[in-house]
Length: 345
Image (cartoon, rainbow, N blue to C red; front, side, top):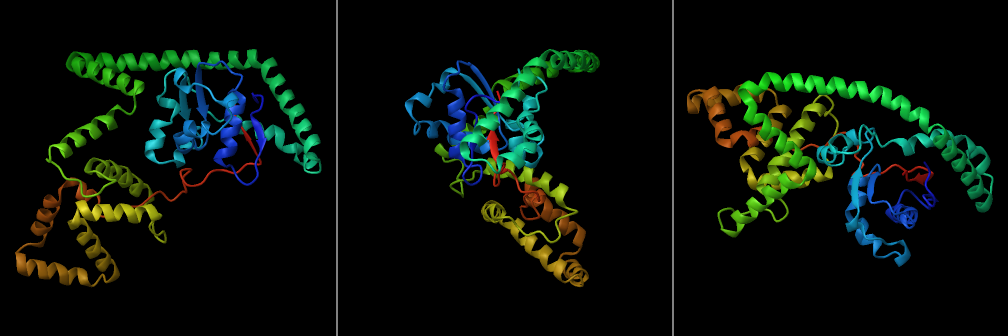
């Protein structure tokens, strides 16, 4: 559905101020208590949304703390976001949204695009009136066809729900005899995470804060603690595995250089290994001579290599290669720029 006051012109690109205005405009006369907001870059846009609201007229402001508001990234756009976004802003991990994909606003462009040949020659007034007519026709068709649409979805959803529930019950029955307590623990942990997905990160932050206050741990970087480094490293390691085949010819991202500097603080030995690997890649003939020199000085090269890896510990071995971001530009950096911006119900 195209909501009232939810479609507007863009001066140059999809700026936050345009999206903020459309968002608050369409909600100014709404009494909805639950808002599920789907937007391509909701992960970035929502961060200062309420701060921006204070700059708008009082008539466009509302008490967001009294509403249940959730932000999502549509499922088609979500895979190109970083891993943290793929869990925090996914429809799959939120109760009450069913199998919504969040891409409905995008589907409307197929219906409205053909009128471009007419509206591009119109003045502002005729242009807006024409768009209103077409959007009104779109809404009318949606309402008239809502019965058939819901019936079709229910016929597909109910059997699938029964099949998945039966498969889950069979799996749990096979595990209950030996792992009953573990299953209950897992269930409680999943439900707690669904209610508050930030609890895990909050627990880690509190633990580090207590350690810092007791002088048991000293952070070497003001913006990056050891736990943040390790969690980021695990995410980047997975990204590296996907990009290993395509990494030739791609340089480090600007953010990667910052991560490398932090890595040097906590894991100086990894930097030495990375430099050594680059030297070996540049001069392959040095491999045999290096191995012989290690063998001559330390007895056995394989033993030395194993000892070195053990001393660096698992996270250091995982980060032997420099940090690398995904090849595809994420919506953290770049947003799409359609001619019109639309918000759905």
